[in-house]
Image 1 (tube, rainbow, N blue to C red):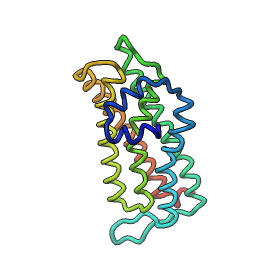
Image 2 (cartoon, rainbow, N blue to C red):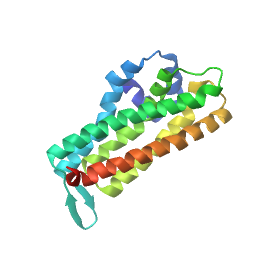
Image 3 (tube, one colour):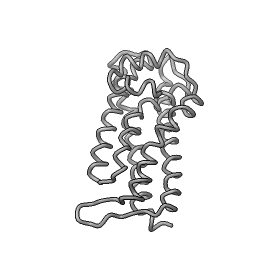
Image 4 (cartoon, one colour):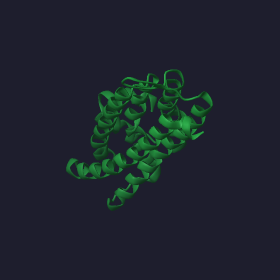
Length: 196
């Protein structure tokens, strides 16, 4: 994945063609790539919330203790990894009507590559200004959608119009997963000190 990050950000069409030709396994995706990429927003949020605290306009920053942030970070990390699997399962279930249905493993790998911009946008949580985190999240989501729309036709080996419909369905469900993840994340990082 790390050798594909720059390609996904600069020329996703060619990069998805190269990815589809590789025979990457799910264990390779997780152990060498996804575990590190998913750690970016987790570590950034841990540092930002313990050192600076959440900042809203004129309200004093809300810091989270190291102990509480450790628990929250573990839960947040597990949720990110599970979200990739969930979106991969969505792609797999939506693909059942196509002749060349990819395996569940390939669908999860594709979801992992598509989520790359969201993981990278988590870097802004190092200094957790709410508006900046929101802006970075929106940019990351938009680029994930772009990767999804440009990658599905190549991944599924279908034409662009069919890929548009497939991608739209996947994106709608993916956004619901993201909203649930964000809601839980805001509760954990924003109010974590009150839970424990």
